[in-house]
Amino acid sequence: MLARLLTPRWLVLHVLAVLWVVICCALGWWQWERSQSAGGSWLNLGYALQWPLFALFGVYMWVRTARMELAEERGEAPQEPAPVQVKPTSYGRRPVVTAAPDEADPELDEYNRYLRELRDQETR
Image (cartoon, rainbow, N blue to C red; front, top):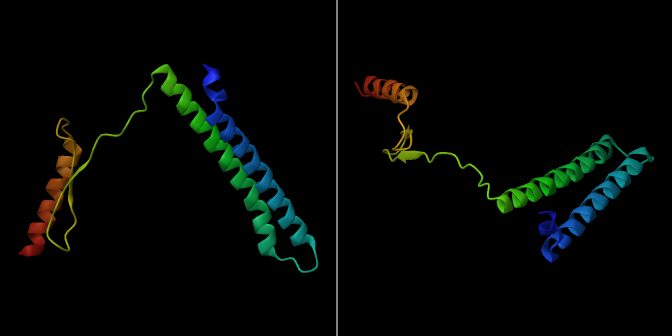
């Protein structure tokens, strides 16, 4: 199963992920040094704290992508949200949102009924 993460494509992604972390940490260190110098400012300190967060985000995305790849190999399909249909309305009006055709949503029906009442009151 993990052999899928050792394909040439994934090896390139591993290298890019490591480069991303190293570059972000180096930029964070550079900004830290810059903030401590005589010409440094709070802005440099902010960037010094931001760059490691960018590195963590890269690691998060790398792990998430690897997990999705392994889930796909196991045959687990990601769950997609139910489609939302929007009815077109006239200009300046908000669309009425409805549930997917195969689903009945009483709460959404009640909300749409309330919106229709407001529209009717507005047009009177």
